[in-house]
Length: 204
Image 1 (cartoon, rainbow, N blue to C red):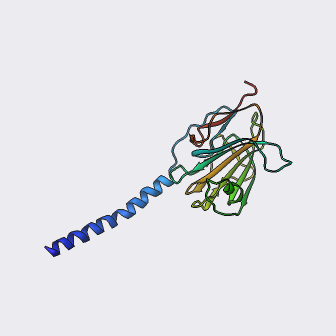
Image 2: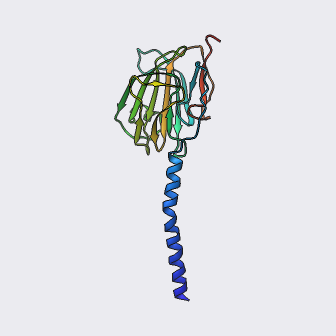
Image 3: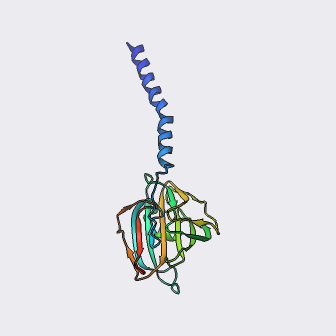
């Protein structure tokens, strides 16, 4: 009886142990998944550069006191979200700057200012005013930022350009204008390359 019970216990142990590689494989498939997206083709749209939840929307954000105001929309990526980053509009990459920093909780405003990040500056295709900035921001768990874009690259709206591993935050900035109509609100879930964050009303 004891031997049979011991054999059964060992069998259960190894059965669960054998599941671990499969669970890891499933986790990796979920983490690196790349679902198909159909970016809207209207050149007046600014699309979500990442999957996630809208954290904040600013219509008068200023990087410095002597800098013109910008429209800023921040997206929080959880570990369950798709981690790919996509271009918010069509345009030419003019600059990519990687800045070392801390790895604070991405939900805090402080993280936006102090965490490691990669900033991409895009010269957008008309009629979108430029420059448009997309910033990949590291977080408490996300300590690897990948930006495959380089200066001179031409990006289509919704095109993949990078990844933030294990989630964090992606920030979109564009020159503020009364012609922008913001189409999302704080707390809303968005899809990278598909959800329209803002629409330029000028010209129809």
